[in-house]
Length: 151
Length: 481
Image (tube, rainbow over all chains, first blue to last red; front, side, top):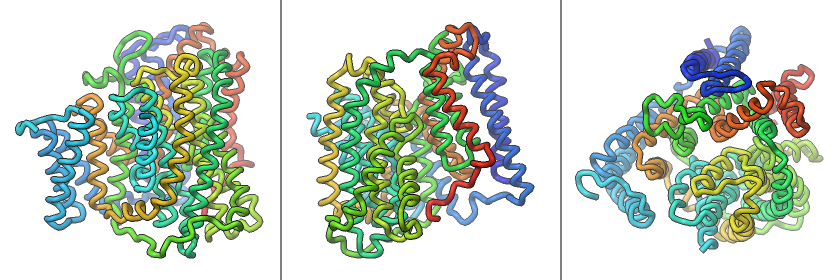
């Protein structure tokens, strides 16, 4: 199986799911399209184009195009660290507040990916949290969460 | 005050363009919430400034570091960086700035003359015409996408589905909200764009080694010589015309314009074999094209209310947030907004020329900020920008989800631009389609009976069928060949 065969299969299943999901809303008639009409059409289109992709990729597979590793030779764990840190930030933002969460977030990333000196980590994280608080909360009145510490 | 916002916009845009990893779409998304407290005119001026500022700034890193600051400057790397290696970074940067200025100014003139009459003509557009125009726009974008067309069409179809999520405008029923309150209004454009373009780009960048080399040669002689001007004038003029008209077309834009301009210059050059080795034409043409496209792209947005590309789609979102509906009535009902935006573009172009030439030294110093320190700031801006829209953690999580999706798209080589355009056009397309079918009692022939709609639909079908004709089917040549 090559990359496009896998992605094409996923898309086809998604398209089917969209079509089936659209049926719970009324499709209506061509003269009077209902709520589910457009989602159903888009689901059909996804199935159609992914079907073309599956045919195209299967032909290329027969010509020798195999699986191209997508995570080989790259520091993919860094990308996953970014993802997890973003999730944790989102979950902690309201309970802990903007300033504290941002400080921790910046400090973590400065150490986790390409470790910086602790002086740089501490200075950058505190300065960034303070500067962004001043710009967004004080100047632009963005109403960022206060959290337990009230800031 | 508007001058201040114009300056803020072009400065931010230039900075965004200089910094790799954050394009104009992401920057406009980040700064969109900051425009909530200013007038619509100022907001549009600032956001527009970011767009064409990014076009200027992107060339700086392309030439100095061989890393495109944003997608429309990819082509500039090919010859611009080679010119820098030959000690000609000055003429490369200089002609890029002057060419962008000339092209940007001329495209604004075009905008002034074409947009009002086009707005008048647009009053003849009905639902079938709007639907056909949007179909054509999506098709053009997918036709010009770099990968297989089926992938781009698939992304467009997925974008249309995402646009269906939320409330149906005609029946007020909710679709595919999964009992999530924030999805009642549909999938927000900002979380999607920030995730697909901002977060995913950072994720990809941190996978690579983050060492960057800055070319250490001294940058001098910023002003091009007479010989440089003689070689560049033709490409600048051609790039301006190409960029302007490609920018007008729904589906066109700065990226496509720069690629097409490079291909044209290479094709008509007496020495095509030298392209890629430091030809100034390879810098002048594409840089002029991508700036001219910014002016052209405003025309369908301001006259018809239809965004020509993902950046204009975001600007359309900004208009709507500020209670302004772009379209044929905009010039009549909000003349101060239209002419204010046009006037600011003139000023913005002058400001950009002033910024780009003397401040090149500063931009190079900013480039020296190591990426391991830069990327957390980019992520933080994405988080704050997304949260501050509606104070919603759900939207932040949605942005992170689309970051992961965008990362997967890039790994499997799917382009996000058709998805974004379809996401914005989807609700309008659905309304137009359903109205047209109601008008025709369900007959799709209506799209071919009306002349304007027939031409637009015919063009879309031609673009879909054209790649299938064996005679014309050829691999898209790599730009360096």
